[in-house]
Length: 155
Ligand code: INI
Image 1 (cartoon, protein in one colour):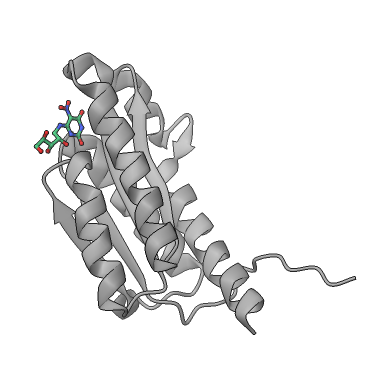
Image 2 (image 1 turned 90 degrees about the vertical axis):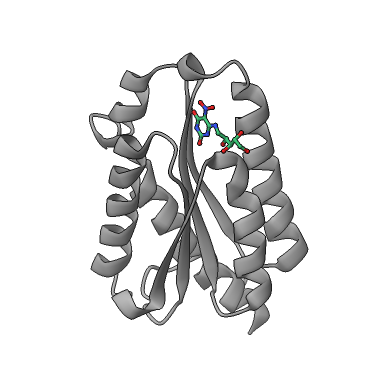
C-alpha cells in the first residue's frame, strides 16, 4: 500500500498571502498568524509575498494573477467578511470562496481559504488570534501541507 500524506517539513516552498484589507483590524492579525506559522515551519521570509487588495471580493482575481505568474507553490487567501456590516455578505463571501476554488482548479496552485465569514465582529476577533485560534495560521499550515501532498503525487 502506498500512502501519501502532507508533511510540514517542505521549508523550501514559496508562498503568497493575498489579503483583503476590509476589516483591517481583524485581517492584520490573520496575516500575522499566517506569517508566523510559515516562518516557524522553516519557510524563509524571502519566500513569502503579501499582496493586499481592497476586500474579499477582489482576492480571487489577484490570486489568479499570482498563480498564473508561476513563481509560488501555494496561495493563502485571508480576509474577513462580516454579515453585520454588509447587506451583500452572501455575494462577497460566496464569490470570494468560489472564485478562489476556480483559481486553484484552473491553475493547479493550491489556494487555501482563510477568509472569515462570520455574523459578528466578535466572532471575527475570536478567530483572529483569540479564543478560537487564528484562521490565518491554520490556512498557512494547510498551504504547507498541500504543497507537500502535490509534490509527492507528482514525483
Ligand atoms: N469586503 C470584505 O472583505 N469584508 C466585508 O465585510 C465587506 N463588507 O462588509 O462589505 C467587504 N466588502 C467589499 C468587497 O469585498 C469589495 O471590495 C467591494 O464590493 C468592491 O468590489
